[in-house]
Length: 181
Image (cartoon, rainbow, N blue to C red; front, side):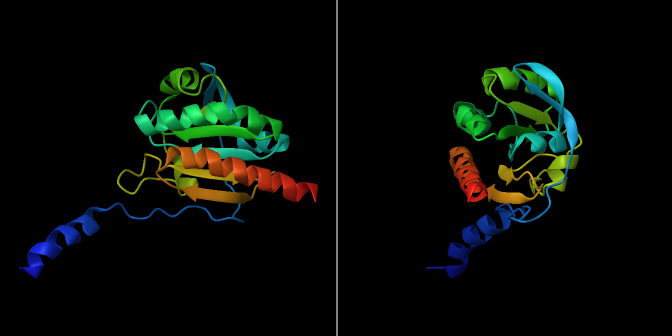
């Protein structure tokens, strides 16, 4: 058997695999930003500093509205939004999509439960180290829990959309229990 013939597909798969994407680490300062966002089909100005005054923020980045994984993730966050609200936590999704697309997505996929923010120049995506290696203007699937002190309390980079909801909710619960101590 020819070893080179066996190794060639493995080598090609390794070379073609997307590079691991760096993300902000726990304890890092979360960049503040202002951008257009939509909830329940209506546009508004989202301001991270203002949101943090109300409580922690779950900021999740998603690649593209109305794609299968992003829609699944939005539905799951919509179902979990009452639990996040009970913990005084704001949920906001962010993508490179334009605001008109996100107005529709906020109603159809997010079920009017939470805001989705537009980052048309990918400035916030880049500031949070959430850019996809293959297309830096597009976001990877990365979620952060940001504490009221403006610091990253939890970070997750995973292709599993449901894992983001489960793990950010658990991280917020842990953060709340640490605050109560």
